[in-house]
Length: 324
Image 1 (tube, rainbow, N blue to C red):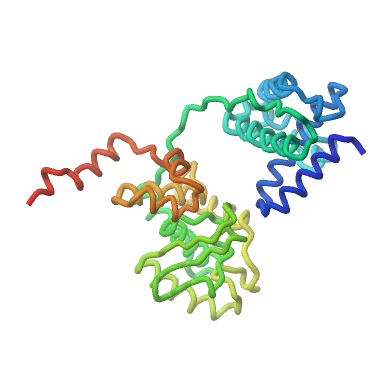
Image 2 (image 1 turned 30 degrees about the vertical axis):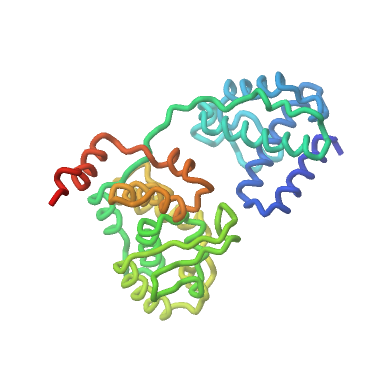
């Protein structure tokens, strides 16, 4: 077994012991396996020889080759069929490149900490400046049009309708929402508890829902109980939890029916955040609701209000206008 492969496997096991999410671990694995393949093609068989120059050349190589033109091994090509992708060879985004850099820095920090190497080759390699793009925003009219597309006579569409409204009302991630159990909900205080094992940050968190949402949930539960017996707030008719990709696929179909483009379940979380701020919400409270590690993360992610947004919000808080 190659030395590089052993180090990757050891690192991934280490990530598991830290309680990192499966999605995060897979991201590390993809980045490191691609880098390993690059080094092997250069006849380098150890990460100990993965100098800063090698890493810079690797990043440049990924940028020049484009999407899905590099694979960790032939098996992944056979499984993923990159030749069938419409975006094959297109430019790899700065966000993706920065993700690779971040993942590699974490790995080499681990190598230094466990005396595998003496010096981190990532020390002088920084993330690429990226022009920030404002997040997509759904207007009231668009959201109303979107929700009108659900067939509420269908169990699955009625379920997805309630999920969509709950995402907009709470700012939860879809992965968190689909794992909610009835025991996690305080119907009196309108609070939903999200246990650490279900959150991205691996910390317990609570989110809150409105009185309007409370009425919708009450109706949904009465309807759901006629079809299934389950501990989950949302499930299949057989009582099993829903897979993220199933809801995402259904959501895309509803968006297509409404004629709304560039919208995903995560867009609802973005909209919750922006609307919370526009309605006078405190960014510190927003950071807690969203489960961010710091307020700085929230600021970087959501403070992209336009001049029109600021103007509209200003009218509600003008010092002179509010004087009595």
